[in-house]
Image 1 (spheres, protein in one colour):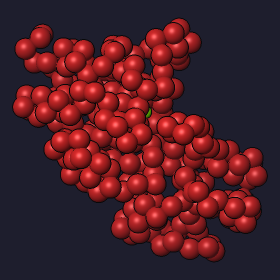
Image 2 (cartoon, rainbow, N blue to C red):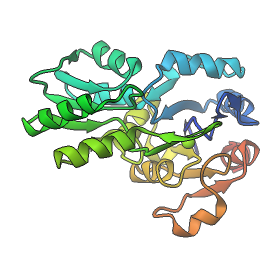
Image 3 (cartoon, protein in one colour):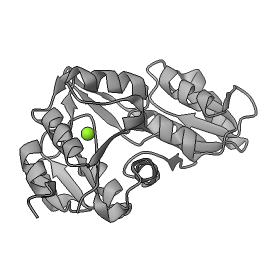
Length: 255
Ligand SMILES: [Mg+2]
């Protein structure tokens, strides 16, 4: 019996600005059946309020508390301290709200997220601070972002530069790591075995859910295709074409 659903966003609930067909109806059915939905994204450059506003635009009942970004997860997983941050306003806001002090010198952490104003100077400072003992943390490892206009470098591309320059590997908070999923479970108040992790990415969403002990569903609305399954490191529990099929799996009346 599924009591909670963790939904990825990009490629699962929306594609660019457009809703994936059936997403709102699925969330409404879940709510009517007493199944709570939480939206969990690796992207760290938008606040939960901004994401919730987009989802409400599709008619989904959703507030900031229904959204967990890797920025939020980073801010809550780490004990607060001084942080040098490569990232955008939403990440800085999440860290500041959680009690972190953003600084350029003597930080406890170097925290790396998506930063479209990334420079060699920031890279050099990050590597030097990590060399001096600051803990290297990455909000997520996604190397590329698929947009309607094409592919652009993601957080993982910046993380890879810092990793190469510092010679150290980061603590990764987002999917496919389990830290963000454990936090999502705590927010839902459900046990892993009664919580379904849903996503479009075989490399991130499915391993993240499986590692945290959840059943998983790959939805074929985004990046991964059925032919990618053979090479996947972790097989999803279910593979569905869309939300109607997904509902048939978890509907309380169907089992
Ligand atoms: Mg996705």
